Image (cartoon, rainbow, N blue to C red; front, side, top):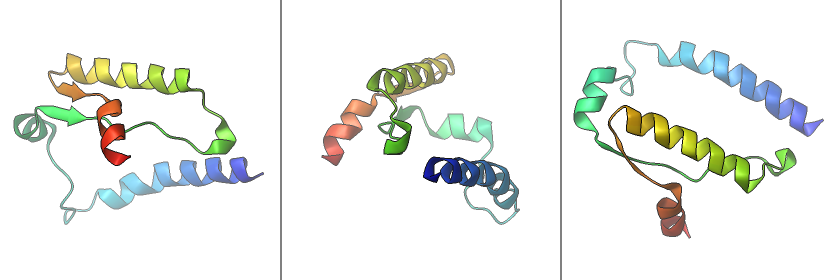
Length: 89
């Protein structure tokens, strides 16, 4: 039951957050072209999920590979999550 409530909350947040973030006063909105001009290197955070979901390490690795490939295709240098994971320890 807890997993279902988490999924419902996540679905609600996915719908509600973009509507809230769309305000003109939002300091976090940035044009895609401006973002690419300002940032060339992106560090990935380790992928984590609720223990209830029991996500295998292989799935986290697959997701990170996909994200890395997409970012590199767009011209970014990607720092793997293992680097940030070592810093956070």
